[in-house]
Every structure is written in structure tokens, then in C-alpha cells.
Image (tube, rainbow, N blue to C red; front, side, top):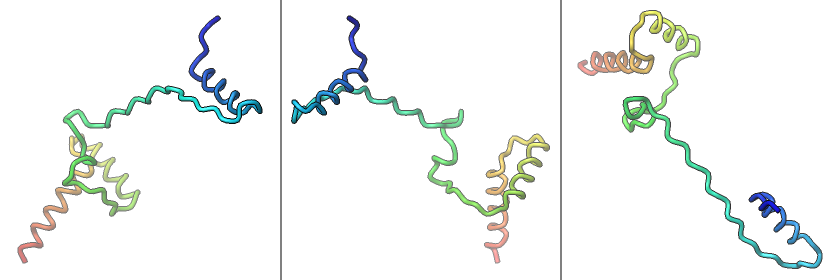
Length: 99
């Protein structure tokens, strides 16, 4: 007779526990732990989301963000939108900090 599956063992324990003749049944069923997923990273060893110097920020409309992303893609630059925003903000801060 084939050996019952891990679910079959658990089911038989539950059935025994609910039977009127067994008032108290204690059973331990070993269930293997699920593997933890690998963290998602870019090829260079991590993304901005996991970098302590970066914080998620929302400050533009979806339409503006979409149009800017398309323009960057059309221009065939390797720069992404967040890098462009960082560059423009840093330039603005530098210009206005000298006042």
C-alpha cells in the first residue's frame, strides 16, 4: 500500500481529533518551510529602492511622467527618469543656494 501524502497524514489526524471517541488528540505534523524569494536587484548589485540615500517621492502628474519617459526613450539616452529628475533638482538647488 502506498505511503499517504503529507496532506493525507494531516487529514487523518484532523479526522481522529474530531471523532467522538477521541476527546483530546495532539499531533505534530512536519511541514517543510517555504523557500524565501531572492531580493530583486539590478545587475549592478542593487537598486535605488534599497539604497539609503534615495527615498520614494511623487511630485508630477502621471501624464507628465509618461511624456518625459517617452521623450527619454525616444532620445535613446541610457538615463532613466529618476536620474533626470535628480540632476535637474540638484542643479536648481545649487543655483538657488548661492543667493
